[in-house]
Figure 1: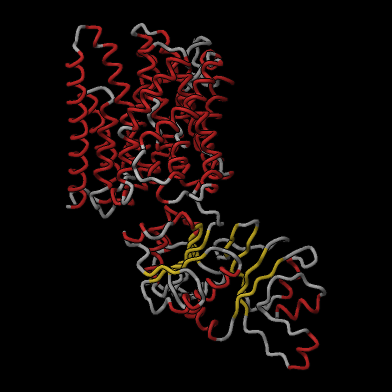
Figure 2: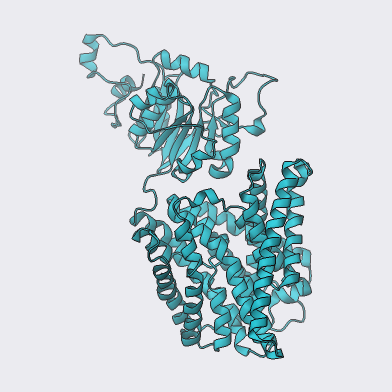
Length: 638
């Protein structure tokens, strides 16, 4: 292919397409990206440059001298975004565990990995030491999506996230150390000179990252940068910080941008969440594109070079090196054995491992180490094996160990009232996990009396992050009496839950126009198809309206249900194969056979005693029972 623009377009379609398929079918994204890259590169060779030989890496031939800078910039932004997720407040009670995974965990993993590479994979001891350093990394590009997918408890999730983000630049620096010894040492430099220069460069790089982070925080807090320029200014500063550190020492920029991200994450900037969201969007695009580029750069010759010794090496890394590293490093750390067991298994490698291996593999071959060519296929084999195995086993293993919720995604209701208390009680009766949050203990009283879990406090406060695990919830209902607060809750928690899963009640009705009303851009989806205001819902509640659930079947199909339903009633939600589908003007609900429908219906008319005896005293809120005949079902629903 000689059309670079077309190649970039294909890379974008493949990368984002793989991300979408992963979301749609709940697969690990990096697995699908790997498959897409291999199919596009080694299998169908659609990126092959004109005149390139069958053994030439296609992407390097296509991008030429821009190949490595593209990878370097992408890795820098990815590591900065990872550092931006590290808030020291998350480490309460886990400081010792995280510290042990970093030191001595890194050194243990380095030497065990180098030993496995030398003894099993058959590489020279020089190349084995370098590759052992690279294999220390457990990338955030893979860890964070896995944590979202598995809904781990806060403690093991924090351990894995911090280890993955901190160890990424450390692993790259270990590879730099070995490379400097192998290359510079041959030119007469002493070991002490090399070590001292590397330590000094690392200190200066970390200091530069800290200084850039502090400067950025001060500039943003004092208003030196307007809001619309903050994301691009931040991106430019990240790239400058990365390259300045690289000028001090090769690959030191990875450490520098990580330090910059951590500094910003703990600087209490008002717009930090917006910046995180922007960086996360950029990171998703970069990860998608760069991983396609890296996998498509493989050749069939490099894939065929993976033999039985390579397979044994991968097994040793998975089942010996990683578990042994975590077991030894966390002795006396106070971590429960279940958390140690899970962390000892979960260690997926990501884009940083592949990028660093690609760079040093080619550099070692140029320096006369022929087995350096094996680093790239071994790194890809490690990435693919760990992502597939860990991606598909983290959820069942976490649930088996009791480190993840076994419940279906629950509902978080923000705003207590008699109406929301009745709705929460009915959801709990339907075995849907539900929690009601409010800042008023008095308003929470009817919720507590209904034996529904509550959270007393401001859901948007920083303290709440340590008391409410949002991973337990798949849906949010903002049902408070303050429309501005409802909109703020919807806007702030949209990145966590997704705006499509957030519904809010409005202060005005569906057809009312109010120029003073809040912009739709600040809101979630409207609660209920009628868009009834909270005052109207409260009026219905005090008028005796009740929640009623009905299971639809072939004996009682949706058509009959709609015909029997009171014209004033409205459907609240539908439970379909364990998934909740809430009614909203933006997304109409169409009941189907097999659904459980929850409706809000007017108070049933009183039945005279004589009539009650004939009808068997049907209750509008009775449990699910299939209808025996049409007349008895009507008496239940009216």
